[in-house]
Length: 196
Image (cartoon, rainbow, N blue to C red; front, side, top):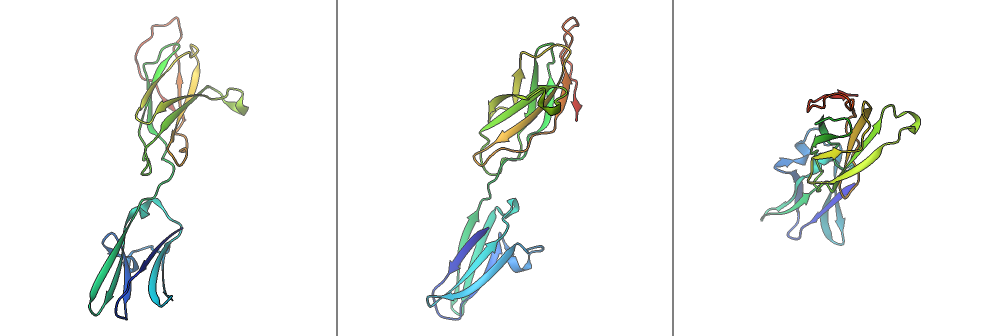
């Protein structure tokens, strides 16, 4: 929940209204999450905008406009909603060899906070009842690729990636499954992806 309080002094009556960016809140469609409370408090008339629950789309400029017969005054609030990042996407595996590969991904929406790190989780398949627990390596938030070493030849691995910012961790990306090459076969730089 977010509460924005606005009060003005001057000749009564003072009339308040609220805007989100350049739109009157009363005219916004689907504004059931917004409520406006006007009250007298300590001989001062004030208004409060309550947003509940607050969502990503509420990252905006909110303006309280107070008017009387002599003019108007405005107070603007800049609201930045911060939450966990979205999951990384577009996970691609290439440079597949018998014991290593390269994994890359696209940076997700970071929710108005820098991504601190990516956590790459991988396990040989199947990962049933945790008999093949996921191993983890990390990369900084500025990186979008990593090399994975010490893999077993002719083995199928599942990969997923999690992003982390100051608020917390994202949901994992979609799992990508890949088979490493047979050690006896020619190792190429082909791309082979199976998405679960």
